[in-house]
Length: 112
Image 1 (tube, one colour):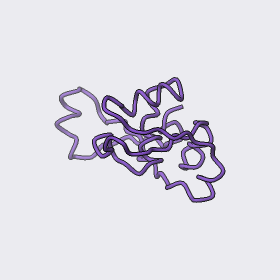
Image 2 (tube, rainbow, N blue to C red):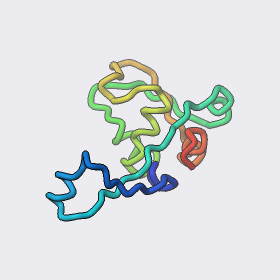
Image 3 (cartoon, one colour):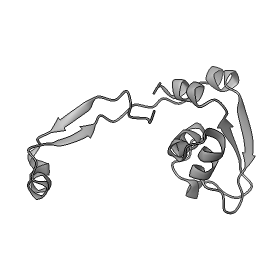
Image 4 (cartoon, one colour):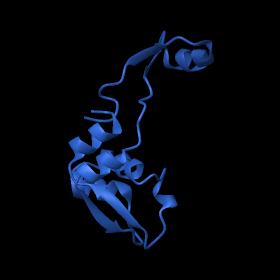
């Protein structure tokens, strides 16, 4: 149920990847199409129940994803929901929002 589950699979035969293909002994490289995530609308944010968390020293997005969703792979949902590319962008004391229901959050982001 990762962010690529609905993504198109692309077979890349580009000359750019020729050294990589030769090193791996393959004819093509299999890649996932990049998903186009959308920003949750104001209506999405109002509809989806979220918990508030005050960021503190030692917090990590993957740890919060495990705490809330039971799976570290959803760290990016919390990051995207809060408009931060990485946890390095979050300063101590900042209030972040964590959507409670992962399925609703994924739908709001356009990947479910």
